[in-house]
Length: 219
Image (cartoon, rainbow, N blue to C red; front, side, top):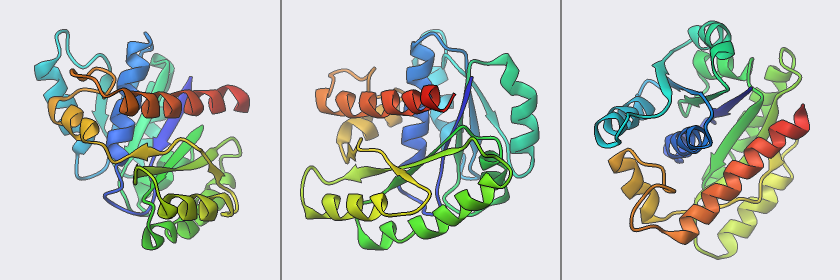
């Protein structure tokens, strides 16, 4: 069983898109998944509501809203009933995010390929240092999300991310593709969307594999 937290201290970087795609993909792999919406904006819960209306048989996973210290206590209570837990936290240093990090196996931090967003890695790294005082097993990883198709900005961001102490850079950039927005609007993971976008599918599959391979290594 793994607990994957998708978070950071910057809003609007696509955390919910990654969290919901990973939760759906894990459920498609026949895993019993618990998706926690720990963001007060409630985007993951909204995605699930749409999915329940559009997908035959329902979402395919269990979704719960939790905030603050309850993220830790309730996940610890519920985790044993599921194969995996995915937690979508808000883009701020909140009690809910800190609670999630205290029990996380994997902490995914999506970042934009832009200088102002890259500098947010420093406070995130500090969060990880503080979390490791209580949770030694946490694996903190950052990746480019909504990246440019190509260009120097991606390379510069990756270079800075690789040099940030305490974080592992995942070379799994997710390009800013319309397929992700179209899928979210329909309550679908990009791997389910028709017509399909092979590049988007390849990108999210690389992230999915990297995320759960890290979990295998950490065990």
